[in-house]
Structures are given as structure tokens and as C-alpha cells.
Length: 208
Image (cartoon, rainbow, N blue to C red):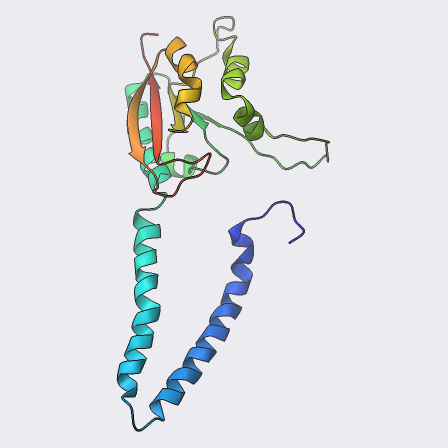
């Protein structure tokens, strides 16, 4: 692909074609097996079906119930935690599109996430907000929240959600503004530089 922006969902249109091709080959194989009189075609057919079905079943269970389930569980936790704060405001310090948003929270609260707009103006060396944050998370936080005591109607986030790989990098900020970890949620066994095994939710002390 010549596109700079790539996602797996871009391949979805060719999935039906691949299924048709695969089904045709399987049908030819099973048809050939049923014509053999000196063997037991039923066992071969059952073997082929099990070979195709069992791995798919295991993948469905793992990908549907275990792998990267953290964002949904974290949103459920947020929905419960916000009722304990008089002025809930959630900040998501996570890669773009890591979690659901209002569609799962179902509450009229303030929420903020790191944006990742494409470079529509074709700026040289363009960095979106998420990229700038990743370059220096602590500096980004200080620049965005340095005026909290100077503006009367400014409110610090009541809850901050992040992958646990980030929390050591902004430990000083969390301590300075009196945040404590209130939830640690399993996410995935397969991790990368930005998405790690656990999701952490930090809550701000109400009296601070």
C-alpha cells in the first residue's frame, strides 16, 4: 500500500473473496475424498473440519474474552468511580482510539483524550498531539496544566487513565497533583511500546 496510514480494517473488503476461494478448495478436497472407496472419507472430512474449527474457536475465545479486554473493563470502572467525585473529569493518556468514549460511559461528564488528526495541511515534520505527548509526557502535562491555580474555572482531571508503561514517566506529576492509583486492570499478554499488560486509573484526592 502507498498510503502512509494503514489499518487492518482496510483489508475487510477482500475477506469475502478469500472465504470464497478457501471454500472452493475445501469443497474440491472433500469431494475428492468421498470418491475414494479404499479409505474412510468420513474420518478425513471430520479431521479437516476439526483442523479448521478448533483453532478458530480458540482464537475467538482468546481474542474475544482475554486479549486487550482492558479498555472495556476500564470504562466500566470509570463509570463507577465518577460517582464518588463531585466534579468528574476523565483524562485519557493513551494512544488514539484505545478506549470507547461516551458510547460506553453513558454519563454527561467532561472527558479528554490525546488527539491524532491527520496532516491535512501537509505540514513539514508534522506531529499530532499524541505524538507530541509521547516525545515528552511530563513536559506536555506541565504545559497543559501549569495554570490550574491561575484560572478560577479550571479543573484538574478527577481521573487519569493510562497504560502502566507510562506511569513511571509521569510519577512526579502524579505526586505533585496528589493522584493515587485506584484501579489496575489487566489488558493483554501481547504488548508493545505504548500498550502494555495493565491499564491504570489514577484518582485525584477530593480534598486537594
